[in-house]
Length: 112
Image (cartoon, one colour):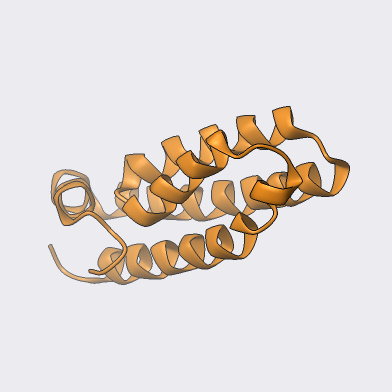
């Protein structure tokens, strides 16, 4: 696992029934997609407060499943001041969310 904290992700997979873990993975994927859309809209509108809120929520969701890189970048986004600092984070956040979702799906398909 390269983008997931193995202590968190593996512990979730081991402690939860497979169908519950799969639901968590699906929820993370849907929530991160929604939040990325919100972040993009906030940058387009120049709404720093909305960006901060969405980044905060994304950091929490990422941390909960062990997506450490995504959580760290989202926390950077929470500190970013204005579009000049926020906009460059969007492609990185999207890539990290995709990588985390892919690894979580692979983990969900692997036997505990």
